[in-house]
Image (cartoon, rainbow, N blue to C red; front, side, top):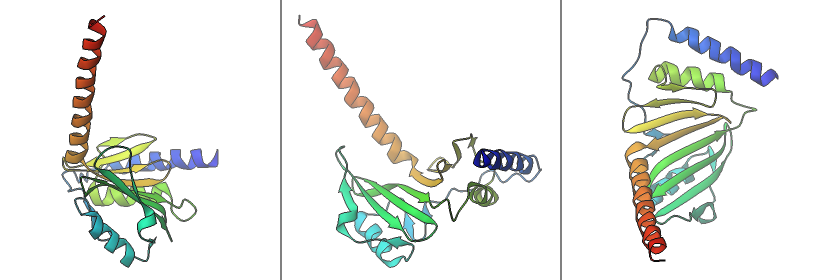
Length: 180
């Protein structure tokens, strides 16, 4: 109950802040955080994780392949405000970064106000997420408390490829059913 009330108060305060005349629209959404940027290769990300004291990166055991072709992920424990981090790759390039925050050390309101001050009013605001986008990158603050960076072009290409696969499967299924 207390968490819900805190969230409601945070949303009211955020709405009040947006009613001010200072419109910061057009801000470029970042593609990088702490030296790790969307588009980097897996080896570059591994090297950056090994150097950053925010992560408990142990090497290869933290890397796994996903069931979809051309995709892999690095999942690593955090040592401070970040509880866990996920780095998802498509065809060897980083296209999603997710930072699950330790809610005992960080709160939604602090992150929301910081991101809003830097990047302006979110393009989308709901109880489950706040989203900033500039056409190339999507930055979201989500519940439970996580910050996500996504390369929009790569994500859309993956969706399009999935749609094409479904379309071919639909045709094959229809042909099969028509053969009876």
